[in-house]
Amino acid sequence: MHDTRLSARAQAFLALLRERLVIFDGGMGTMIQGHALSEAQFRGERFAAWRSDLRGNNDLLVLTQPTIISTIHRQYLKAGADVISTNTFNSSPVSQADYGMESLVGEFNLAAARLARQAADEASAETGAQYFVAGALGPTSRTASLSPDVNDPGFRNISFDELVAGYTMAVRALVEGGVDIILIETVFDTLNAKAALFAVREALDQAGVDLPIIVSGTITDASGRTLSGQTTEAFWNSVRHARPAVVGLNCALGGKQLRPYIEEMARVADTYVCAYPNAGLPNAFGGYDETPEQTAAILAEFAASGFVNMVGGCCGTTPDHIRAIAGAVAGLAPRVVPIIPRACRLSGLEPLNIDADSLFVNVGERTNVTGSAKFRKLIEAGDYTAAVDIARQQVANGAQMIDVNMDEGMLDSPAAMTKLLSLIAGEPDIARVPVMIDSSKWSVIEAGLKCVQGRPIVNSISLKEGEEAFLAHARLCMRYGAAVVVMAFDERGQADTLERKVRICERAYGLLTERIGFAPEDIIFDPNIFAVATGIEEHNRYSLDFIEATAAIKQRMPSVHVSGGVSNVSFSFRGNDPVREAMHSVFLYHAIRAGMTMGIVNAGQLGVYDELNPELRELVGFWSRSAA
Image (cartoon, rainbow, N blue to C red; front, side, top):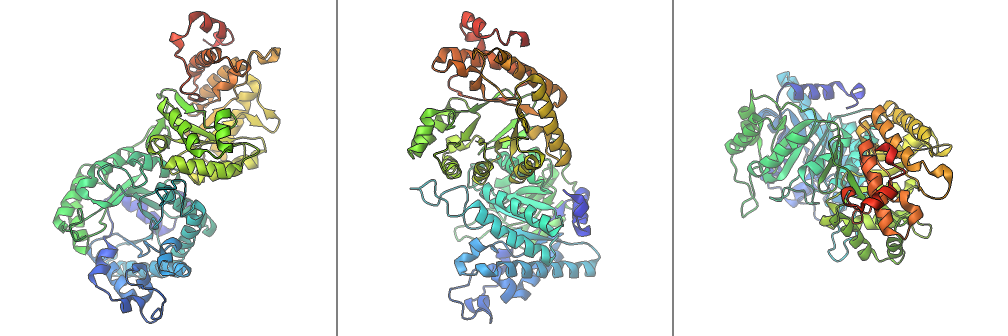
């Protein structure tokens, strides 16, 4: 949190989280449905002649039936809620397009925030306690990670930029209306949530304020995954960059079904955790049968088990549920936020955490048009089906991440990057691993960042264009939620000596950590692996310089990681695969011992050091023996 810009109310909310279990409100839609409003009541006078049906557009009621919405807020506050959320779950251009009301999104959010603010302030005046308003941002009715057309898996009916624009409009109005918290809830596609987080930070920075953020995902069924396929920990890794004050889960499931996933969130999240489940699973008529006492008992057990800091209800819950929950958890201690060890926490559909105890991470290199002639020809021919198969082979052969590079002069590289990543997103056997978005062009990198719901690595940024461009790109990587590969490259060019490799990395490290607060564990240095045995004498130490630079970098900056393109070292022997594979194995043996964390390799063509032909191992190892 950027505490210096937090309002007094926002700081009071964070203080309350430290003191006790915080009570959230319950289902807004459930309460609205209880009023059984007619089409005419939804329309009101203002929209009496609207061209489409409006019944069911609950967000519209902040304009046409404000008294009903205010009454619901007051009912939840009287029941014991500390936090009420605005009636804005569908107040986005995407969702309001169903009613032709896109142009009213700003007005909806502003009116909803003011209604909730007034209800909270009136309750504070009556009781002397402090109540808080969370501005709700729903997931929209579209998914940025998945195609709505099974016959066209690369198609998307919403873009990251469209989502950002809509969320930005909503956040500005919510802030103007006086909310204390931003709530990004019911996340079924984490790319949508990342767009919301991007928009929230942009809007808050523009307004010169800061607010606590709550992010709540939705595990859709017993698979333990979101609709877009992520596990609980992968979801957390994907949104952790935004430093939400609270993260949790809501909707889709009742508390009984949600328990293992809340337990997992409580284990992995180094922030406060919330749970606001449905009142059980829906019955045959779409209603909910779980009584207030039953829901309260489940959430009290969550609290007693040390899983939660904030509890409430979602679909099917009412003020009676919130009253019972508040009573059941009264006096129970809030969860103690754990200290999580430093690690580079990445994700695809599944998490990949890289720390000091991790084994070497293989980054599949074959989905790279600059490194694989076969892959380049497929992309140039538009054969993305076969290109996706290459990515699948890399993962099947042991790659824990795939490097995607589309830097080819004859390609529309941003479009090619977008298309391949969109196709991969629909292939769970590939999408389960993180992506390394690889390009020398920022426009291509940014196109890739807008396609990935998990937490990727950007490869790469450097000081080539000077400090300001370097920091600008690093800030955007932070905002998109990516770790970074930093090349040992400055205004004078690529570092080709041990001294320059280490000096440039130290300079970049200081800029990243001291100027913009980039986490050291999310910095991956690439001190440049160059080809040896080229016949040029000054190239003879290239491999040793990399290995020794790796050792120096890890000694001086112990939390960072080191990577490199391993195939480069054997480039002089292209066409001689047995020698190249042996060179890669011997080089990695020594580089890993020196502290190399990951490398871009062909995972299917990597020999085991101890199983190499001893004579070949000795012959290719002369240039690294001094590092052994």
